[in-house]
Length: 283
Image (cartoon, rainbow, N blue to C red; front, side, top):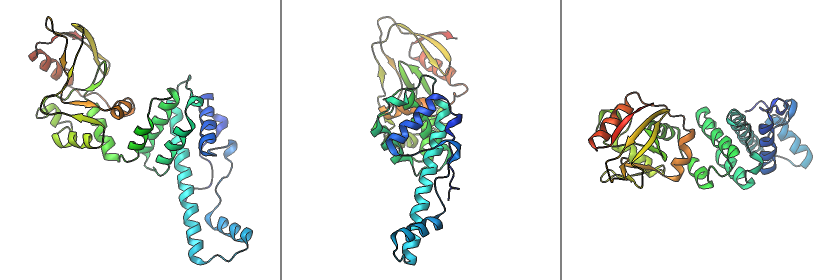
């Protein structure tokens, strides 16, 4: 059971974090107070207090139920405060938590107050910070769907995003899943079909997808590496592989913590050359 103390000391927080705390408190109730004010008493003391106030006889099974309720709610409160605390590190100085919709906040904490795994709390914290930095960045539908995402699925999505290029929008380039670069880095037919089944991608292994209405020459990036691509004369479209991120996938990609894959730039450049896309170089 939590030790009864608030995790957050408001007195030491930057202004955006203080505003976020106030916003959360308005939307879902008390989150934290200065000086580590004690909030949750022990289950036994609470049970005795309620007995005294109500002046009723509490049976043993009722008492166990009461203790259980206090423990559950105490753990939920601890999770809420841990997620909130972790969000502070990703708040921008110009964050606008006061503009986040109260219903969004209430729904957010309703979906994550049972999350106690540290990694998954970090994911939820990044969503809270991202929404505070840019209200509207994460839809309610995305928040609801993430609540059913387990840790292994989050890792799988992060793995996919390691193949992501900025081609207008963030686009993981999955061309031939039988190639070693994909198999050696956790991508297969089954992983992609699973990511599609949970709503993060659209997968078309037969025809693939094309980005249209491109200029003849344009700059794209892969984790800071810039590549200039020139299309053949009178061509304004480019093959971008067999998957597209859904709206939820696009919202999650910037916060998933993916890292580049050694050798993937060279792999993609070779593929493009076979498609007669001229690669001018890297920066």
